[in-house]
Image 1 (tube, helix red, strand yellow):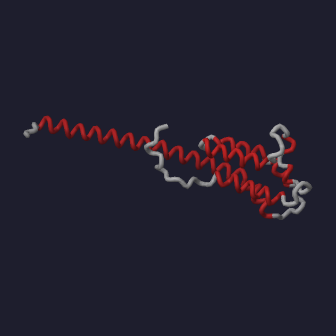
Image 2 (image 1 turned 135 degrees about the vertical axis):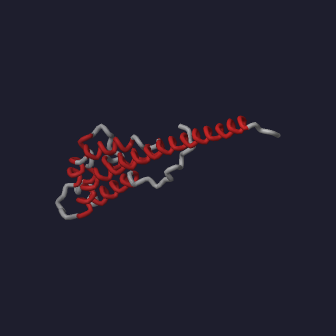
Image 3 (image 1 turned 135 degrees about the horizontal axis):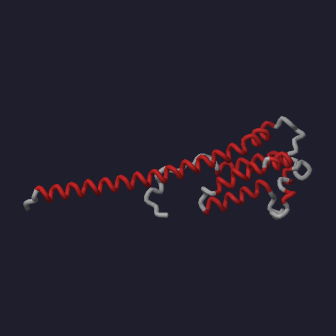
Length: 161
């Protein structure tokens, strides 16, 4: 079989074009995945920052007269802002579990959401002497969701959305 120089140039050029397009598509997908990964990490960092001072204060146990329910109620807006941003980056399955943990943090399962004045009352020393320990446990459960992702960066390279 005799291939003319013109045909050979067309075949080589075709492979070069296909290779360039494949490389460009791959670079584009990797950039999108990396961007999503970075944004989720940043939102998780903001959640960790929002809870850092309250968690440190509770863990230090320096003030035995600390009213845990009032202390956490005062910081609730700061926490809610960070959590609202973070929730945008969770999958549906993660979001379902996260919402349960979040609700467990600020409210009791027996207390309906409509009773906003009762937020954090379960941490009161009057209701539960171990309220501070429960608050620490619930905050740490929330922060597990905001830990830096332990997933492979390119795990969903070929997934279609």
